[in-house]
Length: 252
Image (cartoon, rainbow, N blue to C red; front, side):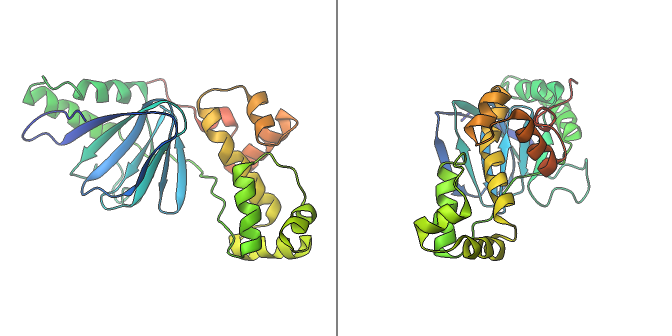
C-alpha cells in the first residue's frame, strides 16, 4: 500500500491491485474511507446495501462501518483514508454515500499520491479535495432475501442465474410449493412481489457490465431481457434514469 505524505498529512492513500473475483471480507476502519476504482469496477457491500462503482463514482464509508469489497474484473482500488469529516455537506456523512469522481477530483487524488509533495502543496491539495467531495443520489437495486427455505432456494438460484425465465409455478414444482405460496412467501419475506424482486436481481446483475461499457444488447440478453427497450424501461422505472445516465459524470 502506498500512502501520501508524512507527519501531519490529513489524507492517506492506499492503492490495491485486485484480480478478477477478489474479495476483501467484511471489515472496518478506525478512520473514514473513500473507496474508488481508479480502473475497473468495485462492488461494495455496507449497511445491508450494495453499490457498483465505476471510475466515475466512489463510496464514502464512515469510520467503524462494516463493509466488504469485491472486484468482478481486473480492478485497481484506490482508497483515501481521512481522520476528519469533510464540511461540504454538514450532517451528510454519517452513513455510506456515493460521491461523484469528476476529472478534476481524479487528477487531484493522483496529485496527492506523490510522496515528494512538500507540506504546503499537500495542505492546499487536501483542502481542495475535501471541498470537491460531493455526495450524489444513486439508487441501489437491492433485493432482500426471503426467509422461508423454499423461497430462499428459488432466490439463490436466480441470483446464480438472473436470466432464468422459469415461472413461479415452475419454481414451485422444484421446491415443493405452489406458485401462489411462493408469491406470498416472497412478498412477506422481502417486502415486494416476486416479479419486482426478480427485476431488481436482474438489474443489479447488469450493473458491473454496464459500468464496464458493454453493449446494452449483450447486457440485457445476459440478464433475461429479449428486447433492449424492455431492459431500459425496467431500469428507468427502478432508478429514475437510463443505464447511461446512471453512471454519467461531470466533465470538470
